[in-house]
Image 1: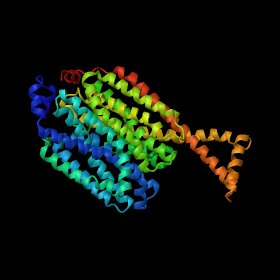
Image 2: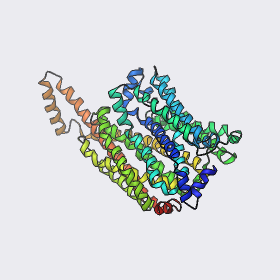
Image 3: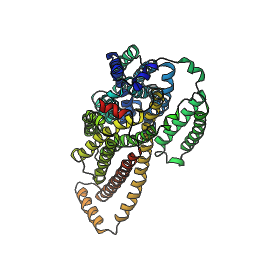
Image 4: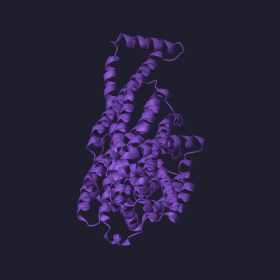
Length: 529
């Protein structure tokens, strides 16, 4: 790690900058960024195409959800582990092995003939691919001098936020134009290129195999149980009525026991699987908290918009993708602006503007009706895309920009884990809120649609007469239609409740930003540039 130490700590910027801007390293870094893009994209790329995969493999609706859940569980275990692995085998070996394994698992997933095979291949894909994500963040903050952060940080921020946002869009296009197999086959050629480039060009650090003797295998096992069962409980809890289901209860017990042993070992052994000391750095702790809540917003809205468009508007995956494209475009065009601002503005100001914009975007969605279409969703989506980028760049810089180089590998894994866990917790809360609130709203609305309500009776008789004229059973059809209207309105009201909850959450973050110290390393270097 001696080479990385001269980067961040170097007093004279000119010599290290010239040394660091080696074209070979820049090419290697961009290959790593592309690998990370594929890994994050694959979380969401199947979300718009689960129906096609379900039909292709003859799976049940409960089973097909595991195509996504198995990937997330496996990835969440690998992300914090990658810091220790990179120190033992070096970034070069870890990243190239991850890229190669991810590519092979992608090819295998395309050949799956039943749901069991698919779930196993997706778990392998998620576990091995998870090693690529923190490596990119660690490389960005060790091989580039602080003066280049205004360029590098928006790139990784853009990939981390853009990939899950456009995943459903790309997935919808691919499964429409070709078949669901291509959701996985599309990774093969880029994966081979990324593997070859990173294996031949990465030279950021040296392996330290002596650490393998001290490796905490019990810590790894208990971390896998803790994080894996947590992800399972959060993903499946709402569908299975939480603690009314024995599997969720067993998962919670496993999570608690695994967590207790894992945290005990983290603070007791010499070389823990995950080094939690990075949280003693105040800015890293706050940056991770913000990353967690950004995960709630990023994954929560990537889930909510398609759900609204599919359930209320009746859109298919292609139409949902075309509507959702706006957020991705807004992120893409805001990234260079966020980079330029990060070199000039106090990062806390950027974050406050970003959180405020995000809260405004979700507040606008609280007026949603059953008729909202592309144009009504345009401004909320633009606000969401621009605000995410304005938040992500300073959050990355605040969390990782002031840490010493020897801490960055471990810290990067933890930082990325918080975003994924934020997404899992956010989706669990959002799903539970939608289910419970829609049931409550349905009950309230049903109280008004009774035989004693003359308006309801008029509606039933006019709609019933219309269907009678076509020779159908008008009264029965009219009652079904009315039930459908009540169901739709109860869903809409529950969507409004969730959007209002997100608005309050991000409004609170504006004030929490005031507790952060202004970074002492990254900001002067950036402005000096």
